[in-house]
Length: 68
Image: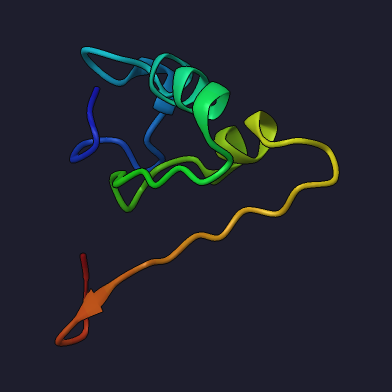
């Protein structure tokens, strides 16, 4: 399994660190965290880690009509 072969990439299975391994330590230091993730990432997993009343900003880049 991986970001190229899965239609939806499971962020809890990232190697060598999962989403929570990366995100939670940074959230202790700052509210503003930027992650560069595969375009097929499961955004529901990100939403679950945000607070109930918090909104996330997700930016999806396209260059010359192709998703990047």
